[in-house]
Length: 103
Length: 103
DNA sequence: CACAAAGGCAACCATTTGGTTGCCTAATTT
DNA sequence: AAATTAGGCAACCAAATGGTTGCCTTTGTG
Image (cartoon, helix red, strand yellow):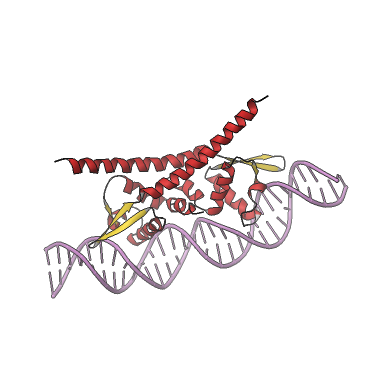
């Protein structure tokens, strides 16, 4: 059940917003990413840590700032897991269809 | 921030296991789905309710049993959201590449 | 009819979560 | 050197979460 952690990390409005921002194409430091979220810097930092623990982002200190980068591979894993479920489901429906059509 | 709820619902090992089972192709009643999860029937039922609230499954009472069905469209929404993020990211990388290559 | 099966509902509990305030350190600016 | 900026860390708090036990209702079966 390793996958659940990824979804859990995405399952919070603040953290999802952070991921959206990171994907938007701009460069972000921890400080920049922590503004306009409706919570304090320290609160935002805690959420950021959850994303780090789930391997959804990577932090790289540079001087007194710290760069935040998206870990695309983890997101891809999450997507593929859902795709696999969909595929199982589709196969099931196809089997039902075949069953209904045979005489 | 409507999407966060979906991920939140998937972000628990018990609930993810339920979704996996439902996708596996077998038919499930609430009772069947609530066994071998390491928790009580009532505990499982509470988790099932979370999946219902997130529109990931649908319950249809039939006599004294209740059928559980996967709502594939919701899962697809979740997948597509991740795909959109990936796409944004890819475009960003492409832009960076173009920038690096121009003289 | 009597009883077993499938499920619902509520109260309760410990832990986790999402957030806060307060203070400290290290790197820059002026 | 002094002040500012970027960030870290810990204690604390209320609410949500994940689970439990106990009991009740309805549906089907001997």
